[in-house]
Amino acid sequence: MRITILGAGPAGLYLAYLIKRRRPDTTVTVIEQNPADATFGFGVVFSDRALEFLREDDEATYSAITPHMESWNDITVAHRGERVTIDGVGFSAIGRLKLLQLLQARARSVGVEPVYRRTVKSLDELGDADLVVGTDGVNSLVRRGNEERFGASVRFLSNRFAWFGTGRRFETLTQTFVETDAGSFNAHHYRYAPNLSTFIVEVDGATFARAGFGQMDEEQTRSFCERVFAQALDGNQLISNKSTWRQFPIVHNEHWSVGNCVLVGDALHTAHFSIGSGTRLAMEDAIALDKGLTHSDDIGAALAAYETARRPILEKLVSGANGSATWYEHFAEHMRLAPVDFAMSYITRSGRIDIDRLRRLSPRFVDQFERNRSAANGATD
Ligand SMILES: Cc1cc2nc3c(=O)[nH]c(=O)nc-3n(C[C@H](O)[C@H](O)[C@H](O)COP(=O)(O)OP(=O)(O)OC[C@H]3O[C@@H](n4cnc5c(N)ncnc54)[C@H](O)[C@@H]3O)c2cc1C
Image (cartoon, helix red, strand yellow):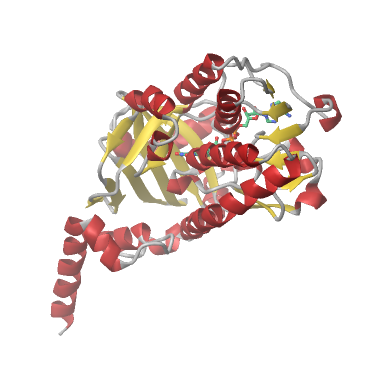
């Protein structure tokens, strides 16, 4: 069987490794437009269970990646200068480039060497493979080449975000909210290496316009954001890496495959970065497709098995991610809440956690919230 995979991000690299590991006689070609050591962004987080999903089936990859991760057990929400700790909500993080390098090594270990620096402009260039996999991210050519048949849609959130890094070390994943004359600002920040952190700045459309970001270049944007978050950065600089303002795309496909073309990862669906799951979902999709391919040599049946097994799980997670994205679209309104109430609104934003589950997960935070409530009720009695 000949399989061509377009895109050597986490989905493409991991899928290539899985397929070749299971069936060494398969010809797996991976094509990537960038050089092997290029990447956008800084570090990525994995929520709570981190790489547990790999452990059972792929202990070797799990063991290769986990030593390079930074982990912590709490989230900090900083609002009106007050820091509220939400205990028990752990995350792990790793540099995106480091993760790609580790996955490249895994692929190499089974004999897959991606073709780098080749931009595919038309699906015709991919030749007559038995299966073409679009792991080519949010602007997927494989998806755009069959847009109607995939039932593809892309809608953009109205908030703007810019992905920076910084040398400041943060002890936990922190959500900092700041009110300025131009409007409300949010930063998602966490360390992904001992002394390197991701720092994603988010603003709503009105703040973006009032601040004049549309007329600023990358350096002016960087230094404006640095001033807004001076306290959180504590004298450290923001680092830019093509850190321009973007709007997050929500990608959806009615159908996951068309003929012998199938979508995996961001090409198929996106999950707002606030839930820290896009990379994990991309890798889990790869696992599901690889399993689908073991069911049958008939490509149509294998792709149907992939979608049947994976769709229900994915839709639940994507619905949580969309709930979270909607909360961020209105974060300036939520900021009217006092810090502890605001933190409660934040942690329940995806609609997937009720107070009883939260009490089990974050007993100290729920206790603080309830004491606050009782005090406020006492004051109004
Ligand atoms: C601001 C921000 C923060 C994020 N934070 C997190 C996080 O904390 N945790 C998390 O899990 N996820 C996060 N994500 C999401 C995560 O980056 C993606 O979900 C993940 O990278 C998806 O992997 P993928 O392999 O499907 O796609 P990608 O990583 O996008 O890889 C696609 C690859 O295809 C290549 N390609 C595309 N078109 C072509 C072509 N025509 N020819 C050749 N090559 C091509 C690209 O160069 C790229 O290397 C974040 C995303 C953003 C925007």
